[in-house]
Image (tube, rainbow, N blue to C red; front, side):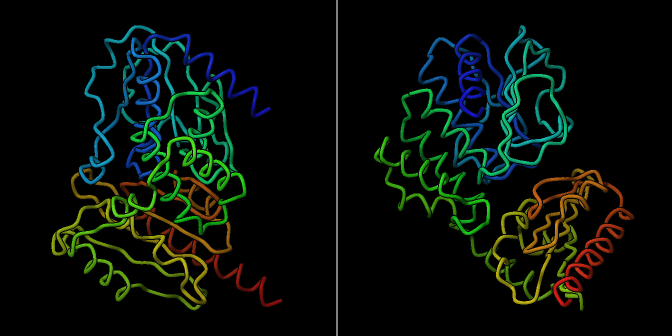
Length: 322
């Protein structure tokens, strides 16, 4: 089944001369790296094709590569490939695009049929793992630049292979990638994890100001004023949430950040037991069972979400004590 879908995707990539690659709003390293790696791999293997990676850029992710500035409304019936996003309304950079066909490649639980080829693999650690497999199966030439982004996306989304989505397949695919490209992977970690001193201090602020309930739920609400005080942006907390994976007696932890520029609350949720994506979906968010997110302009949604997550922890804790 997986092999048939991969073959179908490879055929469509070969067939189209114009391809647009997109991912979700508010990207993380897996989303950005998978998008850039697939674009660059197609360009390198098919130099005559016009391939664009679209969406709003994030300054701190420019180290992985530059996105394309293109008016997608001027493109004639391209192939659209969406990465790392289960619902179409969250796809960034495709407004007004009149695509001929669409391919979805995603490792989140299914939420919405995009009307084309759908490769969904919930057991994959990351979208970068899926793209790596696609390129390996397609016998693409993989440059070290492409390999670097794929490796960093996998490492980031698996939190250095610590999360439960990491599998034997993950290690095998990474091994094949490193051997195929002679990738100097150890030297890449600095690119992923180096942080300015302001972020280190901000990390301490989060740890100091977490609210912890008796049900094992930890959360923090971060205002725009705090972001400015520590000279960080609204995307910074989301890059730190996995640092808190090993808090004893905490089942779910949540960072709520207010993005004043876009007038929206960004919520990152992680779990070590309770299923959280169903709660996130109630507030128009989603994600994995143990890693989800919500974006909402309504403060009332935040209050309801935090209450529901605390209640979810309470039920989980009670079930463990029986």
